[in-house]
Image 1 (cartoon, helix red, strand yellow):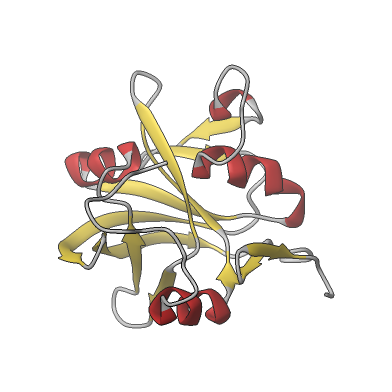
Image 2 (cartoon, rainbow, N blue to C red; image 1 turned 135 degrees about the vertical axis):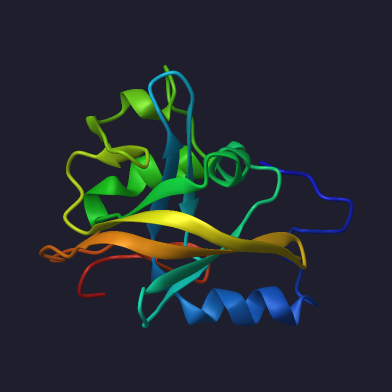
Amino acid sequence: MTIHAGHPFPTPDDPVRRLRGRLGGTVSLWTAGDDAERAGLTVSSWLVSGGEPGRVLALLDPDADLTELLLGTGRGVVQLLSWTDRDLADAFAGISPAPGGPWRMTAWNQSTHGPLLATAATWALVSVETEVEVGWSRLVTCTLDEVVVGEDLEPLVHRRGRYVAPGG
């Protein structure tokens, strides 16, 4: 958990945070690094923009290890999580324990851009294009270097602070 100088926790009088929570979205796991040094972060505040090349934009925690490593290496992996990845998402978000660390919870393949979840059906290799401070976050814009789109039978969706069950 990251502690900010301001008040980052939800309060009944925080309409911006409440609005963002109502948007909902597919949960992604962003990873960067290699076997010597790697980092990951669960991200639900992100979007994809068409173009040549396509781009992905994300609001990342400026104090997260992933943000530092992604900006330092300039490359990363964005993978979409499925309903069965709930525990993994919570571990990389830092909100649930992961004995031995989150990297030991599942199998990984090392790509040219960072660790790739072995079970990920949909993923992208990305390169950092720009980054700027926005509120309590870093807005990171990346180009899409390679994209694989697979079956998305049970996506992990986050809305109003909770995961939404498939079909629910």
